[in-house]
Image (cartoon, rainbow, N blue to C red; front, top):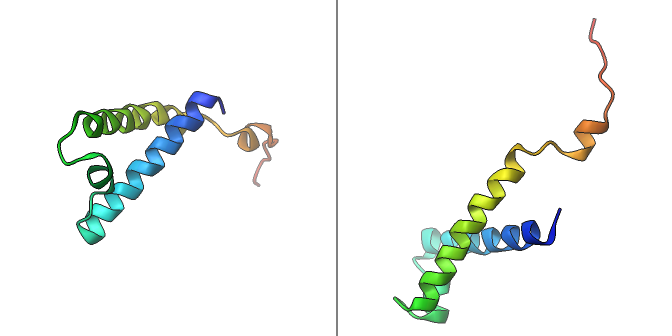
Length: 75
């Protein structure tokens, strides 16, 4: 996994935690830290969105463990 993919995954996790806080407690952590409608808040939301799109590639990438396993026939 490249450094960009790791950063994207971290941003996606932060976004997921923020949405969990919004859903369960009605608390928006990003807006509380950076302001309700500030430019920085919008930039962070944009970065999280881009990170989510980058992580779509991970969804369709075969894992190394699956690729290395030999195929066996079931009879």
